[in-house]
Image (cartoon, rainbow, N blue to C red; front, side, top):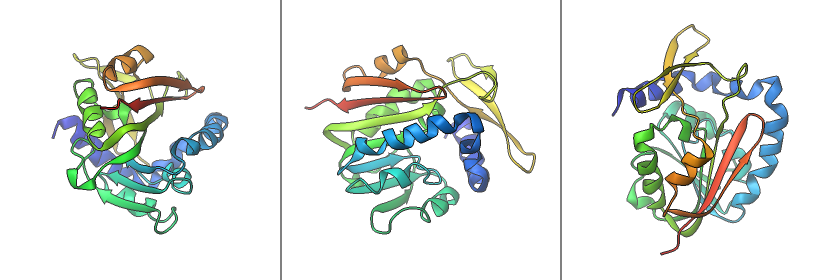
Length: 219
């Protein structure tokens, strides 16, 4: 496990109880209400694998319309919270590594990753997407949702490494500070990453967020 990944796991485990304060920013409410309406129809009737489900903020919107959701996260602390906010029987939760999705999970016809892809290092982004595709049926829908960098609202970027990864400082309520990997990919970078892997790629942007969707290429 890389140092960045280890730091990220520690950060989100520690942050579980205060994770959703990011959704309370007043300037982001219009975007969030729009995305809460936009997202669920993408998964209507689908067997969905949700990667890095966190506290289940987005799971609660997907689960009611999906046939079933398998929601995976590396932090048991966030999964405990997620379990309290979804319909019983519609969602199975699993503690696991987004970079090593188990084969025994079977295949799904849709996938969602909210605010996870920005935490994947540039050298592992394609690897992650290939690993996700291995758990999907041909023709499956993939939706990635994440942050745009907005000066004055986003945490400042404090560092950029030799690979082009960017980092932010994140402070918890108790004062502990973590340096967290947080990338902000361009549309061109996203299109390049799914070349030969997905078709019909589409980028949707709001003021503070982006969503990138594509369909896994049929064999």
